[in-house]
Image 1: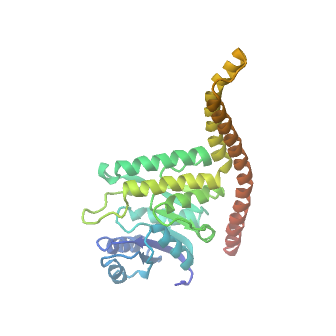
Image 2: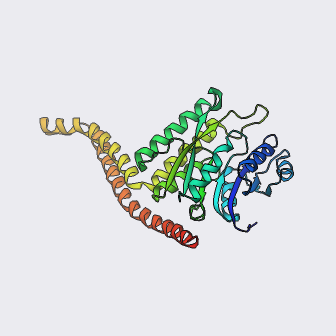
Image 3: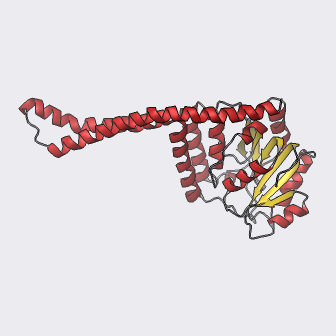
Length: 310
């Protein structure tokens, strides 16, 4: 379903959100009356799709379960100058949306991330808050990021950003992929504050702290390996080299004292670990060159889309 170009498109990926989706659509219309609202249903077992149609949204269905799969389809189908991605669980305050759109259309930001300001202690589960902070720290170390809430489900994008993002994620790890894409290419990024409330009691979250936390963590590791291979493999090589030195130091000292190597297994192990460390250093250097080529291709795709809008 390819849609005619609109100025602002609001994308709402939903799965079993029949309780809240109508209210979210109504609230969005009240602050962005000229925006086109899209609800993509992700194999819901309730009346999410019916409620979305009744509320006046344009709808489509994605049968492959996972937020990443839905966002990938949305980005491929929908044509717009500004994209707003918001969850359909009625936890975000839509009053921030006009400012978000202005940041994209007027000030030329490619990614506008809404930092969630919790309205109560119950708004943020402890596990989610810990994972979010951990990811923010990783981004700060490797990308010099200033984003404090990278896993927020409310974001705004330029057309060039959306059409140059090769979505690979299938689930909730899509948030980390989006942020990493912007930071790795050095695109214009802005973070603004927005209120965040606890989801209604009758609405059930699709996010599972342990399962999705593990997926997000594995995605972070993979993204670091792909986007910062030099730092990633040098860190692994450094740790291995340190272990090798710790194991081999007594062997070397003993050799200089008695001119014998009494612990051959330890010496062989230390040597093997040091070889792997050097291979890790080499892998980092080679993959860094490959990554630079991939970034150039992504950047060219971004610049091509950017040129279309000028």
